Structures are given as structure tokens and as C-alpha cells.
Length: 272
Image (tube, rainbow, N blue to C red; front, top):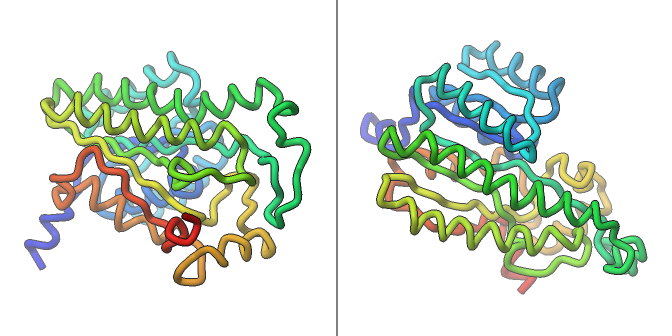
């Protein structure tokens, strides 16, 4: 058991989770803090962050938060500097924040939705999707590396999506190309940063019950459409992703870099 604990030991690590107040980001923050890491949550939702920090600190975990918009580059740089000043270093960063810019051109039951047709997409919707799903990852990684290089390395874990590998008609059009670009960026960063002891990997979730798209998958009909694609008859709960997050952030994941790891209950197999 002692050897196993050492393999997954993240005690004392300085960790940042963007979009950490809910959903998959919350799962990352919880699993790291529960295992002894010092965690800072970055989220634009100040109230949600405060509630989560209160819950987690009540358990004796070392967690705090900063209210920051991941599309605000000066604010992100300052937030990273604040973590480095408080923790003396930054070891692990989860670049998780993102949105479903929606709606897509189809509904979950297969009818065409005119509002999602390419000629009707507001330019601001497209730009916001690219900004939060791609550009914010660039900003996050850039600031992480700025602090990790002088300390001899670290781990960067990016939340992509199985939508980066397929086309989904019910998802906002900018989502798929943004996430596909994230995959290429992750591999490129792994190639550049390996020499500095920095590992860069991507987690590609399938359908999970989160707040994305207004928490659509909590709706029974919407959830059923995705459950029918799963090989195990259900969609993901955020608890399902915690083990993978801990693996990639710990010594157990020391030979992972440039990896795109699908976690989707087999949905991608059926979709393709």
C-alpha cells in the first residue's frame, strides 16, 4: 500500500484549476485537494467558487479561489502570479474552462434548428466559442509554463472533448474546431516542453452531467439521447473522471505526455 500511495502522491503540490467551480473542473479540484494538494480555483462565478471553497475547506482541504475570466489575459497573468506568490511555485495546471457556444443546427431528436444554421450564427457567438475553448487554453498554458520552467517541470492537463474527433450537429458549430485545435496544441506543447520536464496531456470526455449548455444533460429526454450511445448504458458523472485526473497529475502518470485520452463510456465507438 505504501508503494501505491507514493505512486499517486500529490501532497503539497501547487495546483490551478480553471473553470473549477463546477462540473469536471470541480472534480479535478476535489480529487487533488482530497489527496493533499494545495488548490486554487479560477472561475468567473464568484459565488459558486465561494460555496465550493467553503465546502472543501470544511473538510480540512487546502483550497482557495480567484475570480477571473480566462479570456482576460492580464487578469490571468496576475492570477497565476498570485498563486506562485502564495504557494512558492506552480506544479500542476488543469486548463479546463470552456463553454458550449450552442445551439447546433439539429435538436437532440434530429429536427433542424434554424438558429444554429451557419448563416444565422452571430459572429459574437462564434468568436466567444473560439475564445473560451481555444484561446483561453493558450493563455493558461503560456502562464503555466512561465512558472514551471524555472522550477524544473510540471504537469498541464487540458480538457478537450470527444467532439474534437467527430462532428456533433447538436453542439454549437465553433466547439468542434476549437477542441480539435486544442488537441493539436496539446501535442505541439508536449513536443516543445518535454525537454523542460513539463508533461502536457488532454482528457477527452464524452457526455458528462455538468453545467455546460445550461446543464442540458440533466434533462431526461436529452440525457436519454446520449445514454443510447453509451456502451455501458449511462453517461458520465464527474466522479468518473477523478481517477484519470489523479493519474495524470501524479508520478503514476510520469510517462504520459502528448496523449489524448478518451473517457466516454464507449460512446465514441458507437458514434463512429
